[in-house]
Image (tube, rainbow, N blue to C red; front, side, top):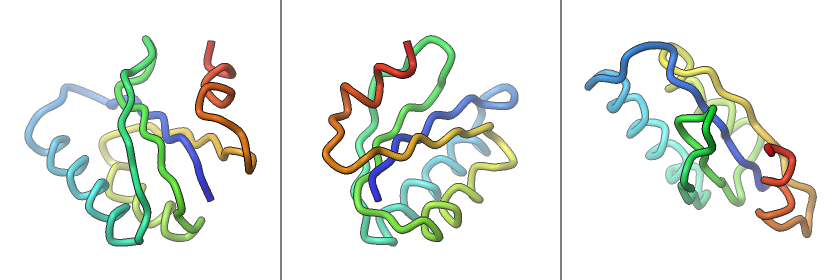
Amino acid sequence: MDCIVLGRWRGPVGQEQYDAYRLWKRSISAAGAESEEFDTYGRYDIVMFVRGIGERDLIRSLNALRAHMETETLVMIKGESIREAFSDLR
């Protein structure tokens, strides 16, 4: 599936949060998925487009961030463009 992951840090950002973010990105790659980070929208600290990841792999990858970040996931409908998916955020 293709999705957009939106995240907000729970507290101050330091080395521990940075390490969790790096682990999350590595787990996405290990699942065989592609990811691309976008400029953030005002209320989000992370906006990441993830392409070709299974639901279980996505959940497993987000576990690396749960202690540090509140996340939301927008699942993209097949054929939907990134622009269309982002229009829901405005």
